[in-house]
Length: 91
Image (tube, rainbow, N blue to C red):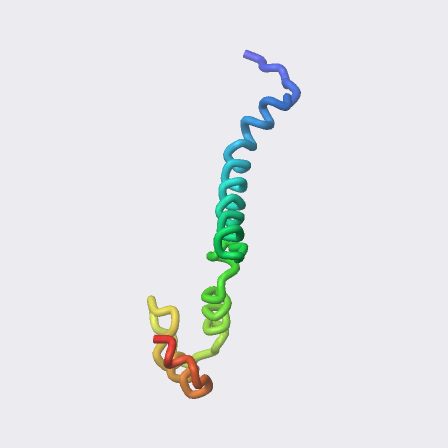
């Protein structure tokens, strides 16, 4: 059976893009509702949060000891406490 190459129609393109459009609309809708209610436009908190920024900076600290299955060893934690005055109060 030989199939002919059919050109893309607008309906096919819309069918394929609809799930992505729905997700984008919902994310922006929630952000817009937050803007109206709380005067804060929220972003994707996984990528643009202060937590991720801090975590990335902590991971940049070089440590002598490597512990399997531990993202931040205690020695790194103690190095941060020595330098930072406020870090211990976060816990």
